[in-house]
Image (tube, rainbow, N blue to C red; front, side, top):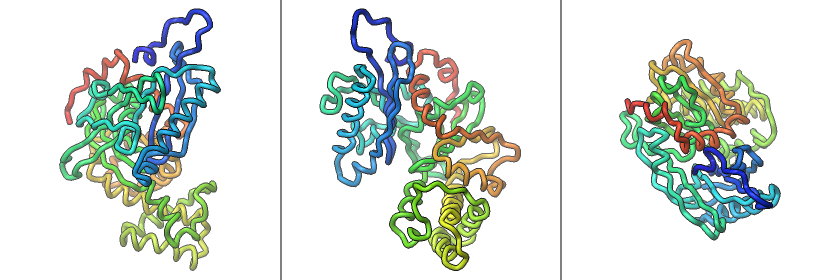
Length: 351
């Protein structure tokens, strides 16, 4: 672990450069960041469209194993290096990942997560490589909101926290396959609420009659504010099932474009997320941080003024771009492994 924190001493002779690999395993994608152990510089990034969903669909993790093994080989060859350490977080630590690691219980500090790291050898994935698996966090019997859990976001949170946040109430909202509101109090992860909105919108676009109204989500489109709000209000007035069919009505009867129908769907999903998240939002929240998929963030920002009964007036809303979000896992691991956890270690478990 020392290598990722501070780098290694200079090598002698013509030895192959040693590197660390950071893996962020998601539900649908797995991201790889190759880091030089000597100076901590990022050498390469890679993303593979494979994740926990694939393992769930085939009742095995063989596809994920092969993908990670191939990524290791490709990164070593292209960068003329030898990977000796791998730090992995996210769904890759679940029963649908490479190695199942139990969640730690909230409230959780960076030190708590560090204490839960498990080091194993997986020769069928990476020979002569130490795999360091970072635990997720679980939230049991949260008052009014029930239980929840996360894998991966806990690392990103510590990569995103600013010095001032260790003395504030901050709500992080991560947008991805699963959207998640995470309550961080004085630098301690306290509570969370998760929805399946990202996967749901993809399933609607692929497996329902709305497929012909939406077109491909791979095609860029401009978010239509009017249609986002139409989707939001239709869901608020009726329910998600009715609101989704109304998207079809807009396309057939009102000649809505595929971009407008997509905007409408994001409005629908934003309302149901607001509905779920409302139980955790409090008037004493000092700051909201949005990160992840930019389309969801854009819809959220359009609708946040409609959430006025929940969101305090004048609250600070910060957006972390998708490009910046890609750096959060690496930053978070560095914080978790660091001996300089002064703020985190002093944080009181007030939740």
